Amino acid sequence: MNGQRIETLREQVGGPRDGALLRYSLGLALMLDGDAREAVWQIRAALGFDPAYSAAWKLLGKAQLAAGDAAAAAEAWHEGIGVAQKRGDVQAAKEMQVFLRRLEKT
Image 1 (spheres, rainbow, N blue to C red):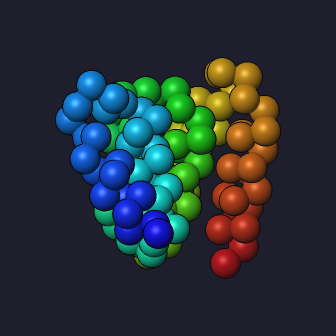
Image 2 (cartoon, rainbow, N blue to C red; image 1 turned 90 degrees about the horizontal axis):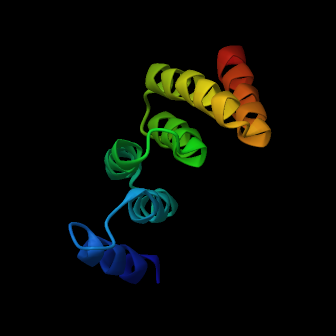
């Protein structure tokens, strides 16, 4: 099921619907399918469309951690916290702070 969703989303890349939400959705689907490395690439593309997309920063950190790059995950969450605070996205900022604290404990 997820494989079909990924293919459907991939078909839209580069088309008129390409943008932050499409790339975020593709990154999330890839994460759920276990492809963290490709998810990182797609989430970075989402942030290229909208660098103020708090949820994308949060997911980017998760994908980087899943791909085995804890330092990059911490960097993404630090950046994401700043972005979320500027936007007033308090919940996203709090969640990323929790992720950072957990990462620092390991």
